[in-house]
Length: 105
Image 1 (spheres, rainbow, N blue to C red):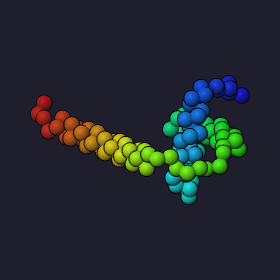
Image 2 (cartoon, one colour):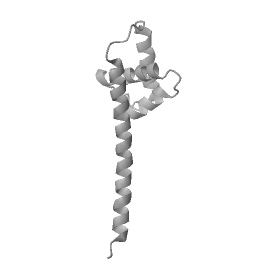
Image 3 (cartoon, one colour):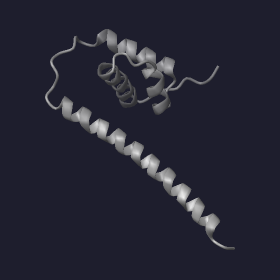
Image 4 (cartoon, rainbow, N blue to C red):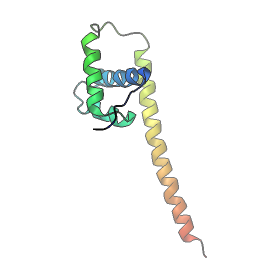
């Protein structure tokens, strides 16, 4: 049996908040717990347990806090920029390899 892993409370809270926020933004999305668990290196069943526990004590949803739209827009922009960065990195690697092949030895 593997050793038990203890996660800091802030990691637990952040992971649960990410799952709940994603579910709130896209209720029909499947595999949220697994995706967040993979991202944060937390076993999905452990994260699922934390989320169930948080949902059980979570108060009823209230009116949205002003600025939520701005936060969502900024998060979307960050995702888009990270995706663009990945594409640019891949392109740079491709062009660098082409330059190495084109140079005479």
